[in-house]
Amino acid sequence: MTAAQKRAKEKAEYDAFLANCPSRLLLDRISDKWVTLVLAALGSDGPHPGEDRRGDPRAMRYSELSRRLSGVSQKMLTQTLRSLERDGLLTRTVTPTVPVTVTYELTDLGLSLHGVMRGIKGWAEAHMDEVLANRREYDTADRSTPADRPTPPESGR
Image 1 (cartoon, rainbow, N blue to C red):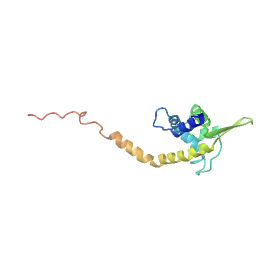
Image 2 (image 1 turned 90 degrees about the vertical axis):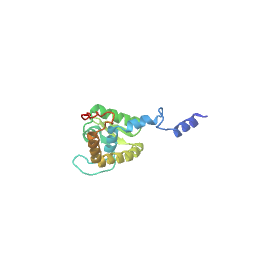
Image 3 (image 1 turned 60 degrees about the vertical axis):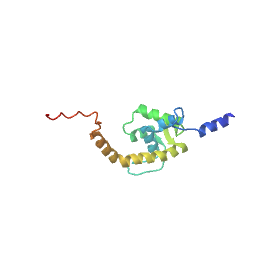
């Protein structure tokens, strides 16, 4: 079997249910909330500061991404952007200005993932009230089994 045939066979056999499948690493990466939000921001989903609209995907500077992603630390945003660049989901462009301008933009591969993640983000936003209600109900329910419950005292016989 040639090396190309071996690679093609391995690619056809990706199965995330298998412990050593490389797709698990990718699933781990893209299931991160910051990845989802970076993709959404670069895909121009959701309101923009001072505006209530959706737009086309566009390049953004680091500082703009940082403002859009409320609560993300500088370290986490940098790590997320680097991992997405490494995976080929976004490009980092450095423009030699004073100061240097760095922008991030989704690649075609990133845009294809953005479409999927936009649906997940939208689902989470649309169903959050239901999930919160279910959590409250679950947290207040008596989850002990009959064997865990104390036995009532015997009546006076």
